[in-house]
Image 1: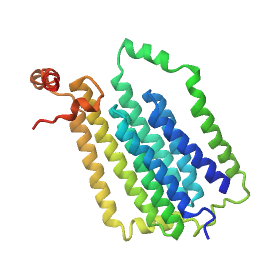
Image 2: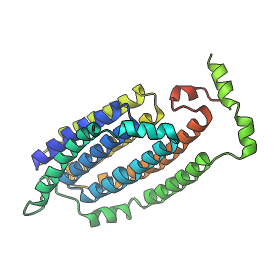
Image 3: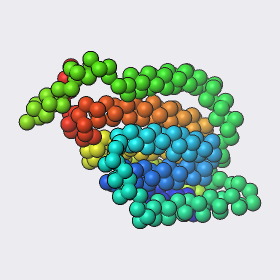
Image 4: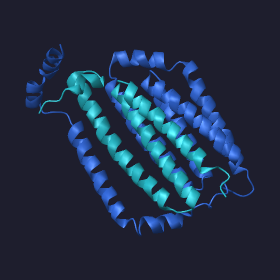
Length: 183
Length: 102
């Protein structure tokens, strides 16, 4: 299991560097997914299987899908189609696919262990312990988390909506103002 | 005791955090800035998990859940701001929006 941990660490660091230094948003998001999957495998070896599942579902699933939606919304029209043809060349699949293959090999190795054993630390934390702690001493935190999610929902709706036509009329000169002020 | 020393787990979290911080400081495309912020939040969550693993307490995982919630709320508001920025300034350069007005 030590080897699983170290290989996942290397994959995570390489994929994160590639994601942050990439020039193309979609390619970077692909690398970021690999990075999150590697970190999820690290969580599993560190005795946190529930957190590993949440990392895959929420980070690599929901948050990345939000990013991809925004990238799709921002690139509309013929220019985007042309761009898409240039972006989806076969060459760019190689890097993320290789890193994901390494993770896949580790996953198969872990699955074919006779018994699931995490790294021998203080021992894996059972999901029922996590739930009892979450809804016991940290109850107030759970309530506050629901408030934060509600605020995020309302804020995203308010900021993301399109302005009404009379508002856009007076705001259409904002870019000109901003450009003039910069010079 | 732990076969992975705690220092190595924290070192990995630190390396990931510094990569994300460098991205926030260096990149000027706002999508990459948000992406680097996600990397930083993920790294801090990893530090919580490593600490919880070292002492065998579930508190680290509970705090990771809170970090996860905060990251989800932050990224939804941040991406709505990206849409507004693109709508008003027709660009994704954060420096264009460096001047605010009341």
